[in-house]
Image (cartoon, rainbow, N blue to C red):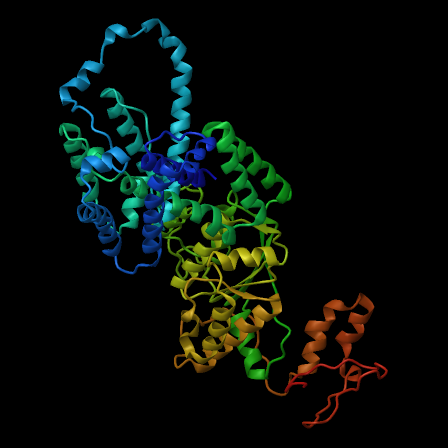
Length: 588
């Protein structure tokens, strides 16, 4: 809402510059009902619209600067062709009025310590302290806005030091308190100029303007100067009132609109405070009292595999010492306050080492990038070899499945600072990461913020992973792959692992080695598919008495049928005297 207000402020200031009238309240828009004022404002509004379209559609960085040079050039050409002098244009209001030049030394005459009422300093302390907090808070918002617009992380502490130093220097030279010139920063970024020299050039230009006796407003078309502000206003209003709607929930959009309107009515300071209160109320109302928790569980799919594939899963996938497939349950709401703790818990659970660079990237992606001491801890790289104490260190799995069935809520900041960062970390280490059982609200949040693949990308990715050979897991590019149920996700991971082991030309691959397995592979002839189903899948649904019977002998409880294509398994509306388990083939 604050950023949308900045856009509205730039729009209002640009129109005011076009018509040479002060506009500070919403009622001042009545000036445009005057035909002359509307005529003066129209070129600025249209020029800004052209600049906005160019900035969003143009592929070359040179297009926008060229357009900005052409606009005033066309104005002067039209004056020349129509035989209109600059004085005539000034009389109508197209350029600024003439004013007597002010020498630079006259600025120092404005400072007179004799006019200061020193006895009132004690009464100004409260205002000074308040301004420190107001400017600090506004600067944090400006830094966050610039960072989001650039798509790059900024060090908030470093940027705040810059603001503080600038304000100190401004105060020593009797200047005004300020923060980032948000419109200038975004405008410069929109032009495609990302060099630090632009700042030096702007400082030099300001010094020249200050020292010069020529008033720029007397020669430059006012609608062009206003169009540069209106251009920023258009861009911010579209981004934070229209485009943002598809990226946040309806309740969050209501907070945005409430803050935007509140700033218009009760002022910036109290409007922002009111928006914060509304956001807190909405957050409490939409979040349960339970915190997010993480639990490692032992689960496997309900698929039935041939003996060789079964042995692969026993030896590699679900080995007790070094499982290659790990399932973690995420429960409760996940929001910005708990996202980094959850990420830390996940990395601890699977033995994932975080480097210094990754910790900085995660800290910058969090809602508190300025915090120097992140809750994330850097652990030394783990080794698969035994340590000097003789115990085995944890090795990260090759397939990580997140069961989000009981995850009740997820906000945008947590999606980026936790799950997107986890996906990037897993992608770097060749770990296939997927999630299952997400509710529609969470699924929408993950897909809209590009944490998970879109539907089309997901289908294409799933198909390509089975045709990609041994390194198929590397095709995942730092995003989550979503599945409807946990069993689908586990079956997909199991089939990838089976394919990887089966196609591996190097059985001694350390990533798949299980030297400490205490599980004996099932030998051919001692394992029956239906027997396995009864003992491992259906046994969990039986009571104690039934389990005793099943554990003794289950051969009398099933019959194996082999049907040919076209034969009926059962017919509709017939009496159900049995249930069927398909171990091979499919039912049409």
